[in-house]
View 1 (cartoon, one colour):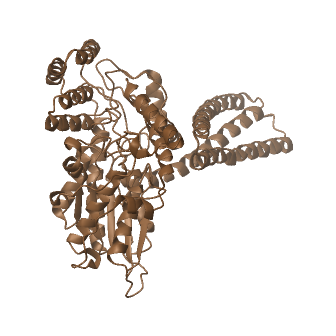
View 2 (cartoon, one colour; view 1 turned 60 degrees about the vertical axis):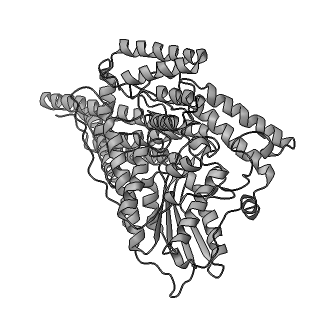
View 3 (spheres, helix red, strand yellow; view 1 turned 45 degrees about the vertical axis):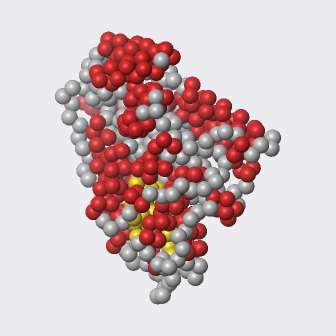
Length: 598
């Protein structure tokens, strides 16, 4: 009466269930495959393929689940109607089973991904890609719960009477030695100095520092520490934003003019409610971060990379981590060595400059014209340009570009101290910070006041020994990586500080450890022809970062300068003769002022 044929119906039901269950490994396989690609492919083309696959997977998944929901509701309605009217229901039953199987599979996948996200996010200060970006007036942003710090080892299998000195270096590319990492780094030079001062004691270097990492990432890597460190060097802080947020991220910063579209609200709602979509979105964000910038036509008046809440969360977390790492080093008997990361303030323009979020579009347009007029006025005389920039800064003090241009003009007049302060201000106001900000350097300064650690104030030290007190291309190879001279100055400071406090049994009567640059390069196997590789690295850096700002001329000129330098070295010229500040071995290391090593 109801249209059932038991044998055939049973076969169809079992077949439908089998198809539905068969989708489970397909869904999981797609997700796992996308995540595997994310973790194992590295080159830029592979990254783009990976990003496309992740986006496609999210679209297919969302479409499938939406279709399954609609299909389940439709099949259920017609199934019930046919049942009441005594009509055959097998077709609608199959549809209902198929849709239900898809939804059950999706629910299982959601549960697994939600568990993974919960586990991962417990140790992440913010998810890759950032938090809620809606900055409209009256919007309250929720701060995430405090991060659970990893449990670091406190017992080690070191043999009794072990005289080896274990040095651990925590940090990112600067601590790793980039772009000299094939040959030397701060950790390697310090280990070499310790071997010379105490030749009867072996020195083991555990450099966990990794290019592109954050202090959060380094903190988690210390979980695998296998030996008790005698010295722990912490030198990290340049990547706290650029390793979490992609370079092209454009927030709705000027909320007076921008309201999210319905589509944007719909996409954000899905990614916040679905663990799978959230996971795919974070993986896609990691791809975008790793991809090199492309020419995007950024404006003079730009937007910041982070929301105010994200900035505050990251800063707060960084301070807590520095404090925690210093406390950990002390608890296991290691000497904490803090290096507050300096950056190339004078030789690297800010990437983004922006105005307050309440600024109207018409005000931004007028201000942009005034900035362009001020730049033209620079050619008419230094004094006229200075006057214009001072006026602009008085009205809009948060605009980084004006501070940087003013500093350049102050240099021309020999106003070195004021230029130094303006350069620092421009770096701290950069809307896309890929250099360590003063607020992050302060985390080291605060920890040094509370603990008996060796503290190297990189900013103050470079200001003391730099040319006219400026942090520029003489001390840096690019925006944040020290030049050879910069690496050796920081290494010398660490060695002098360790000797002054008699750390790790440094003999009081041992002579001062003074780094001889030529001997150092010989020891680490750095040959004159290796400057070609350094030139290639530096030209590549400026080529990639040129697209981060509205005016790429200066960075592109630097790209050409280092390409030409590489060509001339290939033709037989010595790097020291090329007239490029950061190429060639320095004749000596400046004396390290005691004030900046304690």
